[in-house]
Image 1: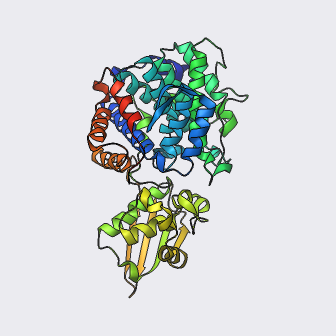
Image 2: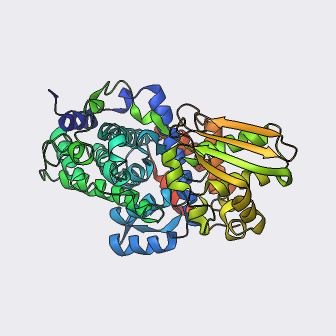
Image 3: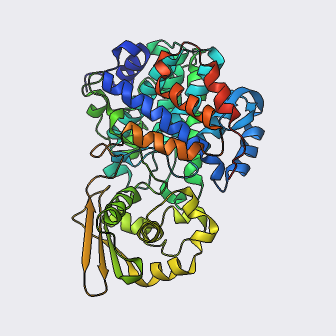
Amino acid sequence: MDTKPTEALAGFAAGITYDDLPASTREFTRNFLLDSVASALAGDLGDETAAYAKFARAAGGTGESTVIGSAEPLSLLGATLLNGYMITTVTVCDTYLPAHVHISPEIIPPALAVAERDHASGRELMTAVAIGAEVATRIAAAIDYTVAGKRGWHFPGIVGPFGAAAAVGHLRGLTPLQMRNAFGLAGSQSAGSWASWGSPTVKFHQSRGAASGLLAGLLAEQNFTASAEILAHPDGGIFAAYSDGGKPERVLAELGQRYELEQIALRPWPGATPAQSALTAAFDLVANDPPDFAAIEHVRIDVPPNVHEAHARFVKAQGKFEALLSFHFMVAKVLRDRAFWLDSVEPQHVGDPELQSFMRDRIELAADPSLTFGQSRITVTSSGGKTRSAEALAAKGAPGNPAALDDLCAKYERCAAGRLSGADAAELRELLIHIDERDDLGRLFTLLGSAGERVH
């Protein structure tokens, strides 16, 4: 390429302003921020949240940065680590589908921490979030997941540091050269593999990606130098290291005109990203001529082969985390109860003998090469041979089937229930929806920190 992608992307990240963002990008960024805060408010339901909070305090120490849902502020680093984990811990946050990567846990926490410390305006925060998400998604697209995914690379800890560094760098007013150095420092910390799949470490990849970007942005601000071309360098550059050179042209294609961040999916239900299409199909089934659960003889869930390979082992879920990875469990719960939310994965439901028997004896998860990632088909056969089928070619919340603001508000209400009073929850929701109208974000951080222990 005639233009070095790292330098060009750094110039973009350092120079973009709120007024440069198209109306659709502004709208999506507001939704993205609302969805991220909602996800974090549900983070107290994660099995490992208490342990991770102790780690964040030990690693980062106390300070003045707000932790969502906690009255105890931590340092910039501590709050970034913990908020990053809170957003992702119950598997309900966003996904950039082309690279199977969550974006918000890496971008939102350091942006919030620096914006709070520096008394940034709502527009400044929103612009930083948009820039961070755009940088992360463009780099993810350019690495080429069709190659990197087969090698076992898990993207949040790889592209997340770049997006976080861009968000922090924008808030700190980095020059293009400083931003380029921030990207070099971010790339030096990029790591994460699918060997951690099935364990909470995949969530740590996201939290650590946020922290890495924070460190990169703050260090670059001190004029600390780094690689001039961390993305496309032939010897150890991100594209070469992760995908045989990748597709660097994707970094710059229509940069500043078309915003790749708008391709991020915002999911309405908890559960693994590939399962969102199965949940979409299952809810379509029960909405139209719902089958009698007792009369169901067989359920076939068709998924792409790579999804089958990753999820087929979770026939009998053990605990919340595996239940959120189990197509068998999620579909069975929807077919029987016509509902699926975080309370569905409480121990009494995961261990329900009726569901366990149904999952074992009547559900088949099958690989269908005609389906691509993000697609599912469910076929239900009932006694008497009656068959019902529903196919989701795009999950609810995905770009091809986007979630409306009302959908995201409903999700927010479920996440906030029991953590904030009705009045405070409504105020926080409206503040987030109209974030770019606020010059002073003090009330935002007060509300985020006031969410108390959940009242059931």
